[in-house]
Amino acid sequence: MSSSQQDIELRVRLAASNMFELLLFRIGEAPGTGEHELFGINVFKVREILTMPAITAVAGSSENILGVADIRGQIIPVIDLARIIGYKPKNGPKILLVTEFARTTQGFAVEEVDDIVQLEWNQVLSAESHSGGRTVTSFARIDGNIDGSRLAQVLDVERIVRDTLPSAEAEITEERPPYDKTGRARARRGRFRRGAR
Image 1 (cartoon, rainbow, N blue to C red):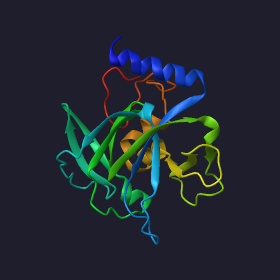
Image 2: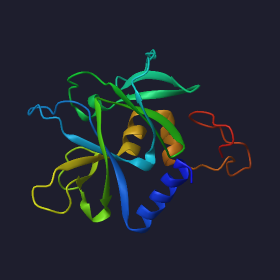
Image 3: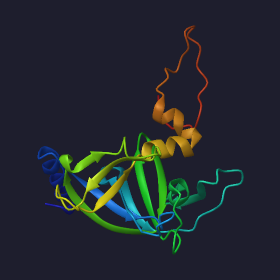
């Protein structure tokens, strides 16, 4: 059996047993404390992890966008997670997390990747009443459901992409029919995607 087939089989077994994998990473120093907190993203959303490639700054882009990178012939935006979260990178972003979800591909600049952990869903607790910002959806108990467990902040990457990349907002939040009420073709907003409806 090939390694990709084994990976798929492992993830199917994890889903069947009410478990998932979380990629843990760090983005810099927390304001006020200087701690390097753990953050997480579901492994299913991560396409690849790369050493930071060359980034081209884009004139007029948001300050939350470092620029764009050419990844295997695809030009993708690189989002500055540290700036969005309000952290200060100690050594600068060294790693690019290339992610795919909601029909978009983008990169998240992070300082370091820590680990991939397998968790049960009951180890994930809502951050709704504990998070003043809108970027953290939940806290994952990395060491299991025990007192004093290390916590990872699970980011709402869909919201981050919607708020940071306006052209992606239509693709993530709206599914508009291609025709208006009169039957005329509706103008498309955002990026053209071959085969998108």
